[in-house]
Length: 77
Image (cartoon, rainbow, N blue to C red; front, side, top):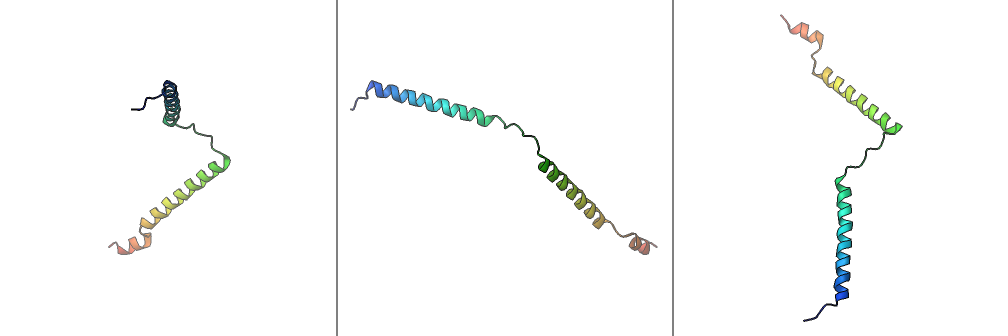
């Protein structure tokens, strides 16, 4: 059986401790949410354009679901 040098054992222990410290720091950072960055002007414009497009789609969908007023009057007795 090969006997380990006490210095090698000590170096291994220090290396393991250093690895655990680094892994601990990374895990601690990963658990914290990233701070939200403020919106830029282009982000605001893009969000406004998307909101307007959604409103237009909703309006068109609502209009498509409606029956025309003339057709309603013709079918009523």
